[in-house]
Image (cartoon, rainbow, N blue to C red; front, side, top):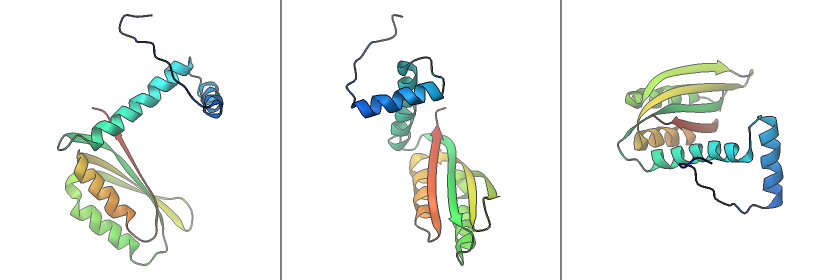
Length: 136
């Protein structure tokens, strides 16, 4: 082992180990350790952006919504205009006759991105909001 790698031990329920092993196989990880390292990178990134204050972050907000809810498109557009400083671009996709998806590329402070996501979640007809922020 390299000098800059520490060995730790995890205690997991057997059902979690079985799921982990299945993912390691399906996603062709070299080992359980590599899969867990990958998961921890996401865990650390989530923690860092949520507690970072005014530091700049980059990522996406994905919104799935019912296309037929009256006034929803206008509400989405209003929020996007009001929060334009945090939004770099918007993509609108028709998933089905009834369902649309919008992907917002975002850049800004964690608090601003969280506020944007929460305002979108609060709209009637919004079925899902997923925030993904990446490290610098």
